[in-house]
Length: 590
Ligand SMILES: Nc1nc2c(ncn2[C@@H]2O[C@H](COP(=O)(O)OP(=O)(O)OP(=O)(O)O)[C@@H](O)[C@H]2O)c(=O)[nH]1
Image (cartoon, rainbow, N blue to C red; front, side, top):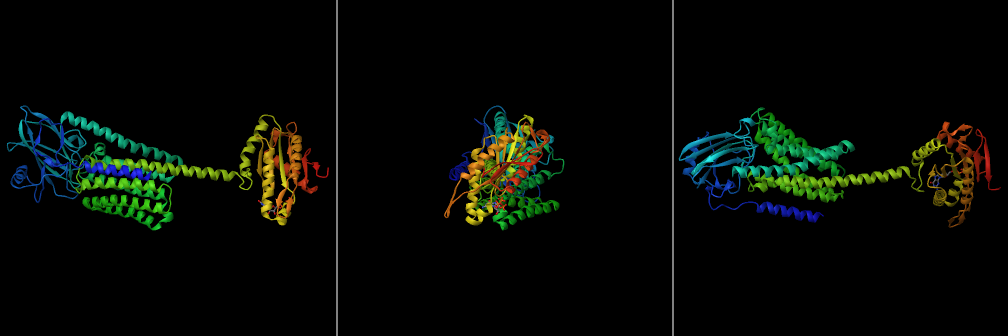
C-alpha cells in the first residue's frame, strides 16, 4: 500500500514539473486563432525604485533597456518586494475590434493599475486590487479582471502592481467566451476539491460531537482552517468579507488563517500519533512551535509589520510540514498503528505545499499545476488521514468490545461473572413476573474447597472450578443463566421452572458433579457440592406473590438455603420452604 502510494505521489510530482512551460517563439500576443493564454513569458518587467513612476516613465524605461521576459506562466518575485511594472503587446490582425478579458489570477495583490496604450496615447486606465471594496472593482470577479475591446493593430498594455503580500502576477488574457468556460471549469474544480475537504471537516466535527474523541475535533479544525485559508487567499472569502475594514485587512486575514490550520494540524498529529508517550522532547517542540510562531505573528500585527509576520507564517507552514514528517517517522519507530500511512500522506502534502509555496515565492515556475499543487496535496492527505482515523476508531471499537466481554465474563471459567449475570437476570426475573411464570434460583458451592487447594495446589483447585462450570453450563437450557458468583460458588437462574422442578434439577447436577474426577499426579480427585434452591410454586415464594418479590430477595433465600445445606453436613440440596424454614431435599447418604 505504502509503495503504491509513493509511486502515485512521484507521478504527481513528475506531472507538476512537466507542467512548467517552455519559452514561446513569439512574444507579441497574437489574437489570430486566439482563445486564452497566460502572459508571464510574453511580459517584460522591472521593479520600481524610489518614487512612483507614471506610465510614460515606465514605458520609456521599457523602451530603453533590455529588460527580461518572465520565464514561466506567471511572474513571481516572492514577498516584501518593490512595486512591479509589466509590459506586453497585443496584436489584433483582424479588421474589427475584439473583446477580451484580462485577469490577474490571484486575489491578494493590493493595488493594480492597467494602462492601455496605442500609438503612445493612453486609451484606458483601469484600477483595481484588493484594497478596493468589491463593488468598486472593474468587474464582479474574485480577482482583478476587466474586459477590453482591442482595436486592430498593436496595443501596448502596462501594468503596475503594488503589494505587501507575495508578488505573484499570473496574467491571463482570454476571449470572453473562453474566460467564461475557464471560470466554470475552475468553479467545478474548486467545488470538487473544497467540497471534499468541507464534507470531511463536517463529518469529523459530528464524529467529535458524538464520540468526544479530540482527534476528530482537531482534524475537523485542521481541514476547516485549510479551507478558510484557501478561500481567503484565492479570494472567495474576500467576496463575503468586504475590505472596508482597512487597506491591509485582507493581507492580515490571509496571514492569520495561514497559521490556523498549521497549528490545528500539529495538535491533531500529536493526538493521533500519541507523540507524548514515546517522544516527549519532540512533543514539546511541537507545542512550543504552535505557541511561539503565532505570538511572533501577533507581535508583528501589533507593530504593523506585515512582511515580518508573513515570513513567520511561511516559516511555520514549512516547519509544520517538516514536523509532520518527523512525527510520522518517530511514530513508525515506536510502532504506532498506521504510522506508514501517516508518513505517505504527510510527505505528499509537504511536497505539494512546498511546490505551491515556492511557486508563489518565485523559486519554482508558477503555473496552474504548481499553484494548485497544495490543494491536490491536501485532498490526498485529508483522505489518507481520514483512513488513519477510521482505522484508529475501528481499533478502539475492538478494544472496547474485548474490554466489554471481560467486564462481564469470568476469565477462568468463561461463564458470566456477577456483573454479566446482573442485567440479564433482572430481565429474566421481570419476564417471569410479567408472563406469570415460575422461576427458580440455585446457589452451588464446592464443599471443602480450601482443602482441595491445600492438598493438591491451586492449579488443581482451578481445574475443579473449571470442571464444575462446564458441567453446570452443559446441563442448562439456553434460556437459563449461569454465573460464577464468587470463588468456588456458582449461581443458576432457571427460567419457567418451579422451585420443585429446580430442586429436582439441583439434585441431578449434585449427582453428576459427584461423578467427576480431576486427574492429578497423586491420583484422581473427586469433590461434592452443596446447593441452596429457592423459587416459586404457582407464582408464590416464601409466602409472597412472585410479583411482590425482587430478584435479590430470591437470591437471598437461595443463599440461606445453601447455608442450611452446609450446616447440615454438605453434599446436599436444601430448598426454601414456607416462609423460610428450610427443608433438606437430599443428601449423599440418602
Ligand atoms: N484454586 C482457586 N481457589 C480459589 C479461587 N477462588 C477462591 N479460592 C479459594 O477457595 C477457598 C474457599 O474456602 P472457604 O470459603 O473456606 O470454603 P470451603 O473450603 O469450600 O468450605 P465450605 O464452603 O464451607 O465447604 C479459599 O481458600 C479461596 O482461596 C480460585 O479461583 N481458584
